[in-house]
Each structure stands twice: as C-alpha cells, then as structure tokens.
Length: 435
Image (tube, rainbow, N blue to C red; front, side, top):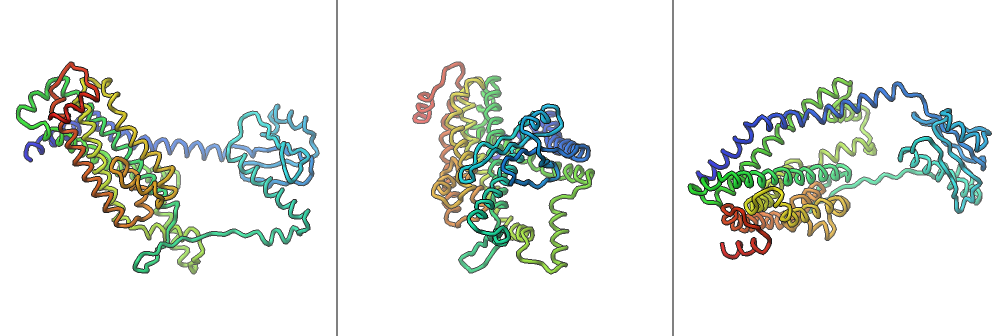
C-alpha cells in the first residue's frame, strides 16, 4: 500500500506543479464567465440601440391580425404583394408575410420574404399566431361566437407530487430534475474522457522513455497502474473543485457588474415577497422553488460522487491497459472503439431515453449495466429512483471496476515491457489468458 501511495503522490504532484496545469485551471473558469459577459454586453447594447423591426403583412383574406412584440411590429395596409417585396429589397421592411386566399380547412401557400434567413423563434411565433386565428375563424364559421371562444380558452397547469411508501408528499418539477440529470451526467462523461486520456498518454510517455522499466523493478505493475489511475483522478477532482470556486466567484462579479443578481438571490427575494403577500399555492414560480427544496441534495451529491469516482476507475483501468499495449498515441486509436461505444451509448441514451422517461425499461438497463450506469444513473437519480435499483447498479459497478482492473492488470503487466511489436486484439486476448 505504501508503494501505491508513493505512485499516487508522484502522479498528483508532477501534474499539479506544472505551469500548464495552473494555467488551465485558472484560465478555463475565467473563459466561460468572460464569454458570458461579452454576450450579455452585446445583447444589452443591441437591445438599447436597435430600432423596432417592421414586418409588412399582405393579407388577401383581410382576416388576420398579429400583435406586435418588443422586437417586431406588424404593418397591415393595402400594400400590394410586389410593392411589399420591393420594400424588403430596399430595406424599408425587415420582412414580408404574404398570406394568399386560404382554404381554412387546408391552409397552405403562406410565405415569409426576407433578405436574411429569419430566426426559428420568429417563424414559430408567426405560425402559432396564424394557427390560432385560423382555428378561431373556423369555430366562428361553424356558429360559435367569438366571445364564447375567448371565454372557453383556458390554460392548464399540472402540478406533480411524489408520494413515497410512507405517505410523504413532495412537490417535483421535471425541468429541475432534467437540468440536474443533464449536468451531472455530462460532467461524468467529460471527466472520464479527459482524464482517461491523460492516463493513457501518461503510460505511453513513460513506456516510450523507458522510465517504466526502472519503476517495475521496485514495484509491481498492478500497483503502478492503480497508483497512476488514482493519482490522475485526484488531479481531476482538484481541478474541478477549483473551477467550481472560481466560476462561482467570477460569475458573481460579472452579474454584479451588469446589475444582475445571482439566481439564488432572485429566488430568495421573490420567495420572501410572495410569502409577505399571502402566498398563492398556484404560483408557478413558488412551485418551482418548492420543487428545488424537495430534492434531497445530500443523497444526490453522494450518488454523484460514487458514480463520478466509480465510472472513472472503471474506464481508467481500460485507458491504462491501452497505453501499456501501444508505443505511440496513434496506435491507440484502434483500441479506443470498445471504450468509446459504451460511453456514446450512455451519452445518447441519457438524452433519448433516461431524461425523457427515467422509469422505462431502457433507462433501467442503461443505469444497471456498469459500462453505461455512471452516466445514465445520474439522469435517473435526479428524478428519484427505487433503492433496490440503486443498490443493484452500485454493486454491479463495483464488480465491473474489479473485473476491468483485473483484465487491465493482465494486459498492463505484459504490455508495459514490450516495445516495437505490433499489438492487436488477438494479442491482447492471449495476454489476458496467459498472464
């Protein structure tokens, strides 16, 4: 154990003390708030200095009306179609919305003309406005008065409450759970790839410089591999902790400079204002706050740490084995496929299956299989999962880590001392069986 600790210490200090580590650790969290500040400044400057964009509407039906917004004003006149196009060409109008004579049962032929491609938000807004007007007109033509139509238009908001086996009720919000699952899953995915590659390149570098031959004379290859994995993982954790502190601090400064507030401050102020004004249980914002308060962040953080570390150790062993089997980074590409595929499956599965339906069969199996569970389980954990599923997944992940370490150790033990020979999958299989 002392020898493993020495390797961990060596890997950790040799990387943390490098100037490149210090620069990357300090500059990376400064880049994102700086970019955010630039975009906020551009957005504010554009909002203050930009004129209202006018869109000409040529409606041959004389029945459509679109309300203006903060960005766009809609001009309804007797302008002819060709004249409207010329107004766009000479810059008098931002765009031209042409609505020909329509069959309301099958409306088609509506065209938007502009010098530049319009934004998706604008087109969606126009489509929604026209759709609603067409629906109203069809109902009116069927004999329903406009005031009746308006009276029956109702917004429906469904509140979700989680009910546990003890009968305790907690307000939940799918958007909050989605955001937490998305962020934590992607963070694990990035961490595995970035620091797994560092393990692989570190092993290749030591192997090519023959330093490894000196090291294995005083320490077992398995101990060396394990120490390298843990040491580099500790470097990653240190970097992430520093990033969290710096990003939080710089974001606070940037938002303060532009007269904005941190989300936590906004939540507390609005929550206090609402409580002073006889809190309304139907208030969507307060429901969101209650949903956040109902999340057990301690359990979520502990689950994240387990899968964060477990996923890294599982894949770190494979990255170390690949590094030991090759002599150059270019040769390692042929062995990256078995590592990349399950990570990509977990990444895509997080969006396609887990975050959309965390209780589906596909989500269950993605969160149980060790190769995909570190990413997929975090998507489920934010929504709340049965304890039995969590225990099964954790147990299998531990077993998967032990198995991957055992397999990687066999490859590492032989490959670390072999130079110049062409290694393929058949060779790796032979090493696993004979070592």
